[in-house]
Image (tube, rainbow, N blue to C red; front, side):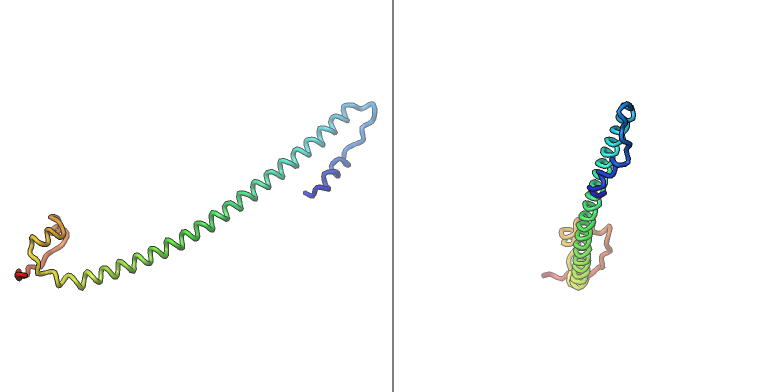
Length: 124
């Protein structure tokens, strides 16, 4: 509400007659209650606006973070594809390693997950 409307609230009250004290105090209470309610509504609207602004800023921040994470996922996916290709191209060169050598490279449980192709051992 505009600040000029504060004065219009008092224009609706009756002018107290000199002998009517009860009506006068009721009018004062009504005006004070209206003013208190006006201030409470103004504070409520201000809090609501601040909350909306805060949510908007948080949303923008999360959108930026999401875009950065998507970019990182894309980069890591491309890197994984590249490394997989490098490994695929390199594996045929390493099939001549003995079983003991692959155990050193991959650990004792490597055979449980991968099948080895038996190739003759060539001395290095």
